[in-house]
Length: 369
Image 1 (cartoon, rainbow, N blue to C red):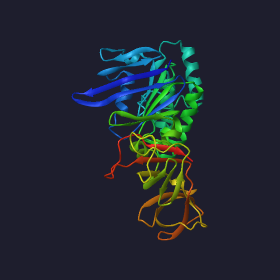
Image 2 (image 1 turned 90 degrees about the vertical axis):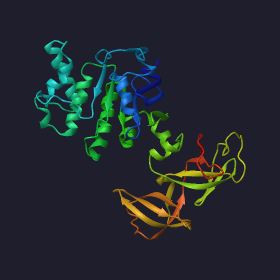
Image 3 (image 1 turned 30 degrees about the vertical axis):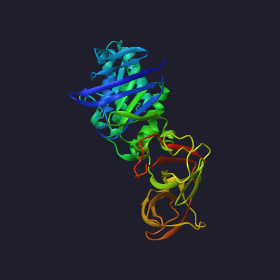
Image 4 (image 1 turned 90 degrees about the horizontal axis):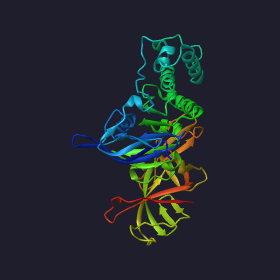
């Protein structure tokens, strides 16, 4: 039985549908993430799980019990669900210890103090209990907010854009720390974010949302290497699309060379096997295009972004098409320079192309070398 289960959830504001038939399951102790652009419905969905918003259709179950359906809603305070808000929502007039203890009024003073000390140690804030929120850094305030949410031993934690107020480097470090804390507590959690780096660092499974729907619910690895549709391929990671021609069931040719597959290649909707000459567009990630001085295949450096250990090069091919390539930073090439490249593609994703050149609105072709 799933710890959290959403079944065909629909939520509307008037005539506007914000969440449109969303279903997913989260197992106990797992960290899930709703990832998508602003306005896709992810925060509204999180608020429905918390009990802050009603729903028009479907039902939400926690540990098998219905907590929300169209004609019924358990009050948020009775759900035993912790919430970490975007702005932390700490009480400025209370100490760190008092903030954490806020939801522990039913405990005796000694038990409360013991629980607060335990959580301060868990989130790495030993000895900070007497300070006030304004005396802490943003990252420390985030940890206090998490400790406060964990204090009453909830059945689940919900996190709404928890790192949006922090700088980029701190976000990544805290994402890993937060994952460690949640796992150490064996806590089921659902995170909402628009930042895929946060999602990939924290979550076991991620639901990509767009227009109120889940486009793909999968592991971070599969979202990157096996996107279910063009939106997911565009949204997750970086990459470009090159036109390709299918040679047979196992091979497709692009400008940079021949790609081979183990799985049958189906490029025409409704066909079991692909005819020669069918058109596809092939997704190439920056790690698929390798800089190789010995390669006869050359491309012109159009742009470069220094990332410390790597450059992200934008390279123009003979046709004028551009690809991206991650290259170790000791290969410092100037804009306008031509460099050798080759393909090293383990996971090929191609999307069928209609006769008029548009993308077919069907599942992609996915295959491995």
